[in-house]
Length: 413
Image 1 (cartoon, rainbow, N blue to C red):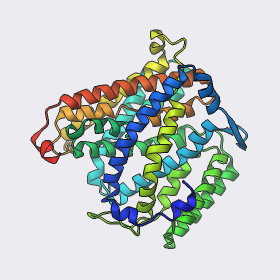
Image 2 (cartoon, rainbow, N blue to C red):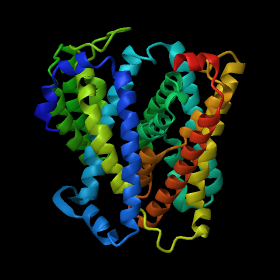
Image 3 (cartoon, helix red, strand yellow):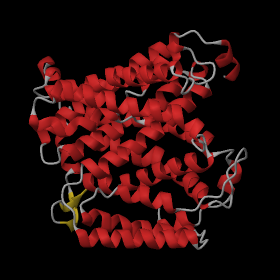
Image 4 (cartoon, helix red, strand yellow):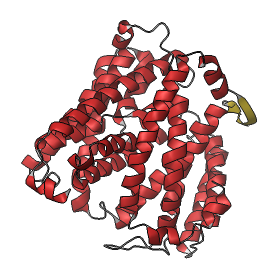
């Protein structure tokens, strides 16, 4: 979507939408189903007569050379380093909205999602290190099973219809948004090796300029989006992953609070969020899935599933997420720190925790950062992410499909 078009987002978009949260759930559910289809197509392409064309297309060099270490920009790089910066811009907008004007606006509301998300990242990482940590070559992948894919998980929930009441969807979304915050921090800190100080100073200067615009009351989107493009290039040159520019820009875009009411038509953040959602959900994330899920299974056997990297990711996503989230919620409730979502049974909480084990987009993304120059390990990452995510998705779907609905949840649905 051209920047000029984004800058002229019509206020009618806001007036038609009841809230960013509702629109988010609708778009994420439908987008998650499109993402599933894109992943299936990628696997078919990578394991058919189209395999050579598929991989040649992804590695087609379009130019220019923006960073020497990356070489000429390829289709794959434009998707992963370019379009995904827009995905992270949307993630940042969602995080800011929730903290300033949403479900995470007070510490009381933040407590349970933070506890569940933190445990849901720490336990999978520990399981991964316990399984694969003995091999120094794959230790860098510790964060791969720590991530949750919102679109994929909400897409599975959408297939359940009324058996997945809004309270469960909101809880999973909130935990996944906090999870995204952790993933962004991990990408910025753990997967940045070489720093170009001059470019980083330039990036800080641009961010300072955007902050000045915010403090000066500028509400037109055009200057912020222009700044985003410049910031993206400088962050890419600095050695920090370029997608971080999206989150930084999002935090600096002004928001007009509208508690208990539809989103403000005068709020730049709400307008941009509503405008970006369909493009991210139905174009950018499926494109990323198509470009990254395709792994050739030629030469793969059952023994491949026992490789430390594959097994560590699979068990981290499937076991780590459910143990971390359910265990932390039970402990928090026992200690009186927080209570589970109103009306949810423990079986429903367990089903949602299983769905949080669908790592896909963020897990594949972190896997690419962890092993940037090793195609064999990246293929093992894909295999582990696919196995862990499929197991989690199927198990979560079945648990929620057959879990008895509590009276309060049935009324909420």
